[in-house]
Image (cartoon, rainbow, N blue to C red):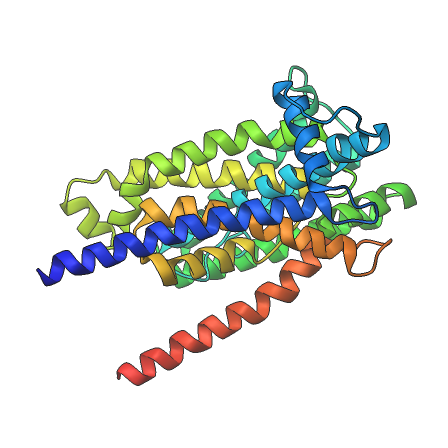
Length: 356
C-alpha cells in the first residue's frame, strides 16, 4: 500500500510538472511575441498566426506592419529560441545521464567548441558543399562536434583504460581550450567585416534570424530528439553503471553510440544557427531531475520544454533590458545560469554533509 501511494504521489507530481512546464512555454511564447518596442495585442497575434498557418481568422482588418512584425520577425525568433533552448537542454540531459555527472553538458565535454570551430570555418572561408547549399553550416558544425567528441574519448582512452567520468570532463576542457585558441587565431587573421561577424556570432544570439534559420535547425532537432527519446531506457540503465546495464541485457556500446550521435546532432545544429550559448544544457536538466527524479522518460521531454521556455525568456530579456540595443543572449544565460548552478552544487554538497 505504501509503495502504491508513493507511486501515485510521484505520478501526480510529474503530471503537474508537465502541466506547469507547458503553461510556462505558452506564456513565455506569448510574452515574446507581445512585448517589444511595438506592442501588438494578443488577439491580433493569434489571428495572424492562425490565418497564416491554417487560413483561420476572425479580425476584418490587421495593419500590414503588425502582420510583418509578428510573422516575419517575432514568430521565427521565438520559434528559433525555443528550438535552440530545447536542443541544448535535451543534449545536456543526455550527456549527464550517459556520463552520470551533473557537470557534463555540450560545452564541458567539447562538443559545442568543435561545432563552433566548424561554423567559424564556414563563415571565414565562405564555402558551400555541393548538394548541401544552406545546410553546409549546420552539417559542418555537427561534423566538427562529433570529431571533437571522438578526440575527447580518444584522449581518455590513451590516458586510462576505463572511461572515468572526471577524465572525460578534464579531456573536454582541454579540447575546448585548444579549439578556442584555433578560433582566436582565425579571428585574428580575419578582416574587419569577417571579424565583426564571427565575434558577434560567437556571443550567441537569435536576433536578425528568420524562417530560414528555423528550417535549418528543425530537421536536425527532430531527428536527434527522436534518437534520444527512443533510447531513454538505455540512459536509465546506464545510470546504474555500464556493467550493471550490460548485465540486465542492454547493448551498452550500441546505446552509447546512438545517444552520442543524437546529442551531437542537436548540439551542432543549435550552435550553427545561434553561436555559443552556455549553461542551458547544464542547469535545466539538473533542475528537472530535482523534481522528477532520474527517470529519463520524463527528464528528456521536460528538459526540452523547459529549456525552450527558458531561452525564449532569456532572449526577451536580452532585447529589452537596454532597448533599443540588444545584449548577447549568451550573457543573459550565463548571468542567470552560473549563480543558479552554483547554488544547486552548494545545496547538494550541504545535503550530503547533513546525511553523513
